[in-house]
Image (cartoon, rainbow, N blue to C red):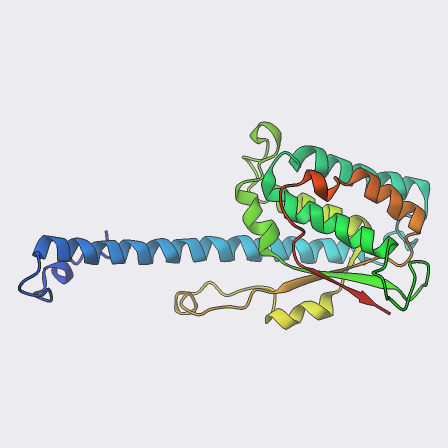
Length: 245
């Protein structure tokens, strides 16, 4: 009751209602306002928890991806690496494509690969030019909020509330590079969840990924072949893309 603001009943009994108003209706209105405020607060806390957990996973994956003790050979330059990337994408698509919550992300993956292979008309670079790189920017909430609806087939993610985001990160790092220095534009990655911070409007960080320049066009075609065509998806690609170089 104390957490919901109902422990101190006197606040609902104060003669603040107009004398001509129905006092019970006035008290009910105060209760509804308090209830809605608590729901907004709970939603914000849950959202920030998911977002912080997501960026911790992202940072861990980035640390592993850039670990000098690991293989220094560029990704998808060996048969085993190519097969691993394609398998990672295929498993993700097979598990989540039936859930519409994954469609903006899947469409975004298709768009960045397609644009890397097929530059927009009027572009000064062609897809074979080494300086031509496509960058994809999107909000992290596209993945964290989808965790609540993307449970996989037969609800296999019930035990892991961030399974969808974790597997999406695996797909991203399988052939894309996280442009970490760009993401600070969003005001930082980890958001505070202290009581006195909850009323503030935080700017959600933007994620930025680029196609790994070492990946050949032939392998990009292979990636495109295992991604669902946007015409078979029920949502537009999330985020924005820009051509660099």
